[in-house]
Amino acid sequence: MAEDPSDLTPTPRPAARVLLLDARDRLLLFRWKPPNVWITPGGGLEARETYEKAALRELWEETGLAGVALGPWVWSRTTVFKWRGVLYEAQEQFYLIRVQEHTVSLDGLDPVEVVEMTEHKWWSIEDILAAKGVETFAPRRLGELLPPLIAGNIPPIPIDTGT
Image 1 (cartoon, rainbow, N blue to C red):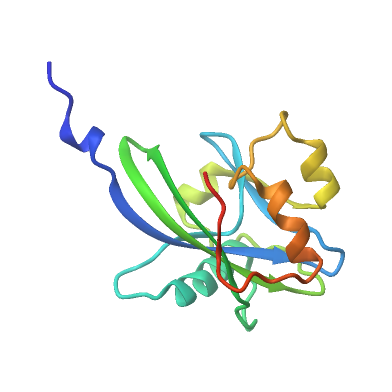
Image 2 (image 1 turned 90 degrees about the vertical axis):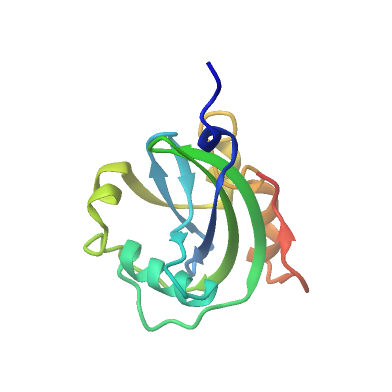
């Protein structure tokens, strides 16, 4: 029996993500199940939406944070994943935003996110590095790529993070 072509050809999914760092240099991450991975706030672009607008919209929906300036586009990532039976190829742009502190509000989550975003946590770089091999982070090189940003070293062009 031949495979369904939709299983072989991923659906393009442009997405914007936010690296939200607080004054203590902790990064906000959400745990998604499945596949049980920690990811930054963000998601797919809506029709005719720019990456920048999507980043700010997703940030508000997933954290309740509004009225902040979008920082620089620092990373890019292309990844293929299957979710709810559909194969996607996400083209992600990561934007850096710094805040003094923020209490996360989940009031803007949609019903799917309420079920599948099982927890959120502010992670220090030390905690991310210590969890290597125990937890899964996206992008996988998060522990390697984050310290230069924390130190204020913004890349002149976005860095490809790999998967």
